[in-house]
Image: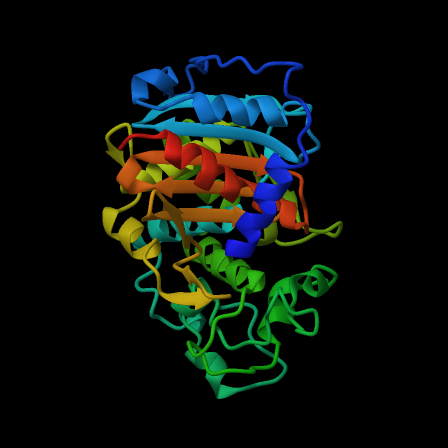
Length: 362
């Protein structure tokens, strides 16, 4: 993480060239009757000095940020868009949608569709069933193992040799069957490898137990309560795939609502949408992936500022899609971007560490 932050600092501060040209002008975000109240940065005790420097430098620089939204004390205080991106344009969330699916699982548990995450997936996933590489350990895979990326299946998105690497699976006709037919390489719960197909299995369980497609379930039990109606589900591949394999598209303001829901322990505008117990459980570290604390499809990422370590509960997606929640600062930050498969997608972490966090008084 230190190397990544160092790299993005260089990208941010060395490659920029626009001082003295087109100065940044801050405007309080507009209230759009979308559920957000807005306020000026100064009213939330935010020092704008570094923020002005940031946007002065990146305004005409070569970067791949698409949007940046900041919420403090339940108030939208900063909202900037770049290139052709605008307030009402939805963005491909990539793996950030995994964290939203974690919320949906919590709702499914709250409503009694699913009894316990320690139940084996075979209790709920009636079809398909494994046909190849039959192994009694597959009967031991629980929903929790899918949440913590520790199913034991040969599924590792970050290893091109893995049979369950996501790009390989996307080319298959039946993702569920192919995933269930993968060989076991570890005992369930033994080691965690980043596995998107495990999340697809989990999502299919929500659909089968509720009798609803995942987009119907999300609309009915989550999005309508947050006032989110500008949302799309698209395929991850060019082929026709199951509903549980769809990719989520959402606006930056609505991504911030997801962050605020986590910050408010499952509540939106005073209404409990998902249980406080699930929010606490699902955002508490359970394992490590590449040395970073991993929860139930959420990351806990540390920032060190002013010799103090602050934990961000974070949803991440390839290209620079982030929802960062910092409870002790009552802060939510959202980034979207187009730095796909590039280290430049970590620019958001440098902005948070060196610009945003030092600018905020608790």
